[in-house]
Image 1 (cartoon, helix red, strand yellow):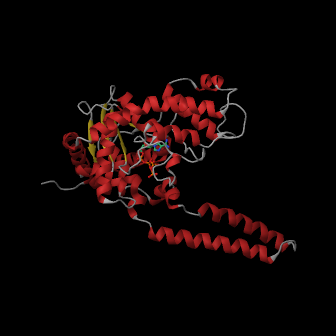
Image 2: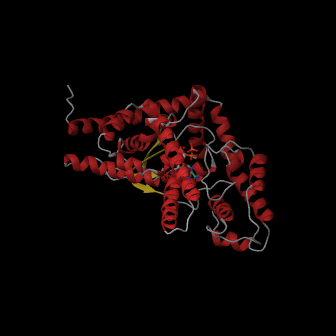
Image 3: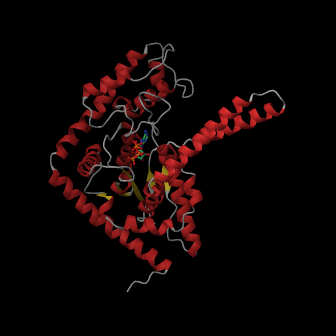
Length: 376
Ligand code: AQP
């Protein structure tokens, strides 16, 4: 079987160091050993509101970023998802084999919806405890009612949020499964945060194959590798670096200039511990910066820690800023140059969409035959 990779990034602006170290940089290394399809997943982008002009511009920007980071557009297929209708079509078909229970487990949906289910579960425990105390004559009725009130509020809030939520945001992982399976991709290089969605894609492939007793879809293997598979926010070492974080100081964007990168690293949250040590639990911010340093410089984590073990955070940050600027500046410059040439970017996308369509239409035909759709 062809060793084929499929992966993508949403064109939602602010492409950041997490996208680069968690995903794109690994693609650059893998493109030599695999047949590779790299997508700009614009159908995924509209699961949250998008301005049409900004969406078009971001689609070109992400394309420029892929090429500037080192993806060869001659050797690989680069295209935007909405140009190949198979994604949406196969997404529908696969949705018919995906139990709601599987989707209900997806943590990204819950996080994006900021559901308070977890709070409610906590409150329920407290209610049960207070009730026991009350029955023993030890607790107070006001205390009990207070927890009941919070519990009910969380439930109402969640129910309102869920009613307003869009189907697309909920079924996002099914479309992602279609993205991957539509090309019979065998390997999917992604950041740590996408692991659960990939497991779902494997489950959906299995469910379809079992239903019809076929081996149509391979089980796609997640490839999560590198020194920074989960880059964390510069403002909070326990939260992932994200495009949608309100604070621009939480992330390093691929479009940031040298001064901005240096300023963001200088202002990155640190701790009061003396010297540098790696401890994800106790020193999440330091651990994140060490991982970033290691991923960008290629130096081993232990070597970095021993180099800066006795120096202060400011010296370490200064060196990290130098490493980051040296690594990212050429990429940013090349991105700017490419973005100025819309004709070139559009030609890459057009050619990519034609190639992608050829492969995906073939897979869709097989799926239709298996399902029993008449093709005349
Ligand atoms: N912080 C991260 N660390 C490592 N990898 C990351 N990726 C994203 N954030 C990190 C990886 O980048 C690829 C593309 O991500 P995406 O654009 O499809 O969307 P996302 O994961 O939803 O990115 P964001 O920044 O977190 O967007 P918002 O804020 O809109 O939710 C994926 O391979 C992902 O693993």
